[in-house]
View (tube, rainbow, N blue to C red):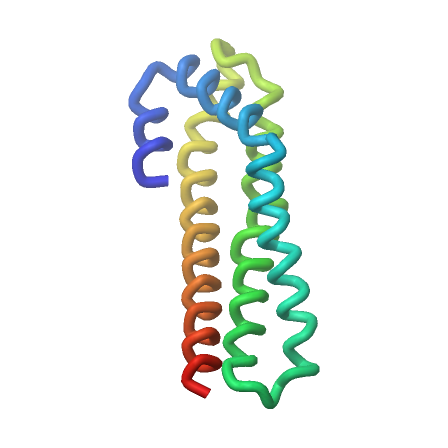
Length: 137
């Protein structure tokens, strides 16, 4: 969000579109999907277990961390960034349609990526705080 998208926005539009299309294809790999969806799966399990362990130290923070990741990262990705990536994949980089989409894409995709980053950081902070509470007894 802070440097890749800025750099892509500074190069000629067709090159920026082509580069982002390439990034979007490259990210669909086993390692990334395992890390991204694995974290979502663990977050879901932890959030689902929280009500059954409510009296345990740090459990509200575990629930918060799970929900923050699921909503702030996974849901935002599915509902916002992926549809924008799909729309970008359908345009020809040199087309007028591509240039018009790119102008909107740079702003909206970056904004939603900031939301994903904040959600992921908040989830991490909640999980770390829960571990600290549990360790403290």
